[in-house]
Length: 520
Image (tube, rainbow, N blue to C red; front, side):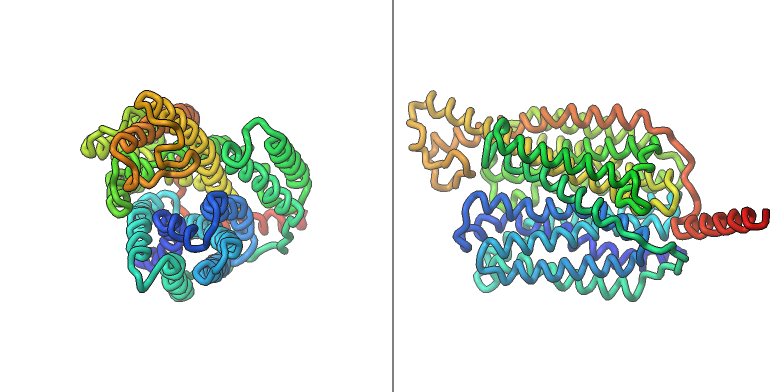
């Protein structure tokens, strides 16, 4: 395919990716209003946030496997269709139960977009040329991440629109993506073997993963880490996943082919993706809260303050991708990205309520540069080293573990944040002679800073500043482990044929082998 044909095909993919990113970011600043309007509890707030993430994480491997068996374009359009249905249900919700259900449907659709966009990219673009287009992914990620909270804040603050449009706004983009994919994406027909879907394995994987993710999401909030609920959820999750491994090892068409983990590159990039998810998403997801509570910024300004990190990610992913495509050398950028990401997290572990925005911007830019060089190129390394018939499975496994790492990191670090904030606030209130509970801030909720008296406001700002820095300090060793993992990845020359071309070659080779066997 020519560059023009590739860019045309990518238009639908990028619109779909923008929809998936927007779904997760546009409600960030709107959730307090949504929960208050639906008269829901703090527990419901948590589930509205996590329902989509759980569904997305659990279904990514299924979408990846389906892409190895069925038409990729049709699956992309199906995932976008599910996203449209989920968005409409969410927008018309009049109780929190329907809203949570709609977020699950949105998550399933987003899981398909997350896995399939990268699979299709690998199918139409050779690994040697793939780096050139990483900047487009970075641009879409940056726009969706920055624009989402800003748009959500504007919609909520506009009386004649309201929070429901946070869900409706993604529908036109999803419909546009479906139309663009139909018009521009042309994948050659490839002979497929008879498809057999491992429903039992799929059920066991989804159930096991959901049990563990529900545990890390609720532990420390709804129940103690050391409790019977923890024992029940972890025990059930481990047993289900052990059963899944047993089934996957014996079925003809496993959802996750265990054989791909015999590939050293796939195993190491999977471990690195998990650690990047914990460090990156677990550390940065609380930055917006730090901006608003500790630094006293508005939701709109808080959205803009993350721009240095996004710009760092965009520039580094674009430049590194261009250089990789030109030279064919990629491992040094993985190692450099891991080093820079570790340094960025370490620098952010020094922040507090008095850190200047100039210094904070520099730290965030360093983190963004490291992540931009590392995250997408882990996928490139894995896609380059697996047979074309396993591209979908390998890509989705990396996306799955990165999302799972993000979920685990967010949940665990969120519990640590809550405990440290409570500890620091108690210490500060005692030192100031203010009785606990008389400060106007709830122990388990984010305080409304505008209603707090000045002495209490300073205590709260300090507490959130110290606690947020602790999160980055805890995330730093995860980034260091990712660096050690990346060092052991063996660099191999980037292939110059696309996934579809390699799949045709593999099919032709298999046919010739069969003829030889029959002839002999």
